[in-house]
Length: 618
Image (cartoon, rainbow, N blue to C red):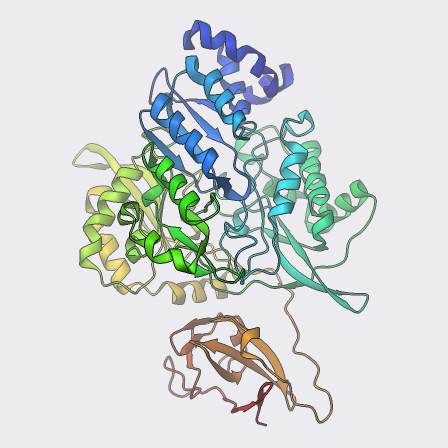
């Protein structure tokens, strides 16, 4: 039995909460070694890089918070935490430089504003991630935040869920735009539709077994289940309890859900889930996600008329005790007091009326937390690094900022790029799903041990997830600016992903079939049915056509790529071109010409405008 399993077997982690007041009075030296581990069940983490000090992690389901909570966190940060805190890739906030003497006062202050730190570490269900603009964005199938809250309410404070074999990550999202890295999660509920009793029903498809650490990125497997929103929390609970009862516990690096799934296979796992729930579910529905991803940084229309949300970049997620209450003030003055946190470590102020947008954009804080950052900063994500993390082997945040500042004036804007830093193989910076992923290592230069990285390119999550490929090893961090500049200038990351998809076996994803064509009736298309960059498949005289909304104009091309038959409707729109998801061939939406291979051409269709919408000319 490993040490952690022994500690859990002797006493539940939640029980250490009764000892916190005593430890606060006696000091850090009074804490027994096994209780230093159990304190993590209360979100209190001893940091050996800062002897005598702790980190505290605050649970914020779906990243939805408010001005009162942010003011409280700002006060704690200034009073007890040397003025800094970090937004994480799980949409929560980590407090720094906390003394055990101050933990009771911090817990009390958080509780006053409805926040807890429970079960945010060790072998627990971590913060449930969701689309940060759930309920706001017109690009969602439905608002899934209530499901995230319902599931969180089931397990927080319950000892039923506090002795898992290992940590457990969950995302629940109704957003079509892949903003939560679903394929990296132990459970991912993704937006889907299903025809049930002759009605189209909104719900979730279920993915399981994704991970970043413990051996690297494993893309979550589809369970071939469709779940309605009202039954989703129960299904998540049953999956967690299957893991609790049957997951491996001998070796910590082999204890994630992914290893149980690989041992059992999807069919046995699905059968065991049905047995635990006492019923079977429908087969998977249509995956309603679009291929593109979004970070929600910028100014966006909400689906509520006359309102907008403003996404602000927080460089590498580091915020100060002065900035937090200022964000709270802006949320009160220009919105409703609500604030959202993103998996990209950024902030969103929603519910801003059209009339107030101009005044908000002139606020001085938005010169620091920018709504229109450069591409180098926009896609920059970093884990904690060796500054505070016991596992990290290199410094990440400061170095990521420094290199980004060096690159910013050298690189032209307009080419989206994501650069993610992870200080160790645990992968908390999500380096596996970025255009460029940097994994911290040590190497020797002239006999001296220095910080270095392994460089990955082409990783992604979403409906066509790819395992990024390691292209460089042991690159000293001092030489990284030149390496990254070359990669950003000349890297064709979408092409790399297209090539990787041909090499990696991809699980089948249910897709919508083209609507049946009634005899003598042409499909009617309305522009408002398609958001920018989205596609819809219709059938024209027996041929599938993909319709695209590009800058407010509709285009129609044959759906099947003339190169090798992939669905162009699943491709990414870039300007006036669509990029085939299989081999990254580029087709002009207006002419059908292929800029990748001039010998290949896609058929285009003429759209005829009528009073009620558009029809396609045969």
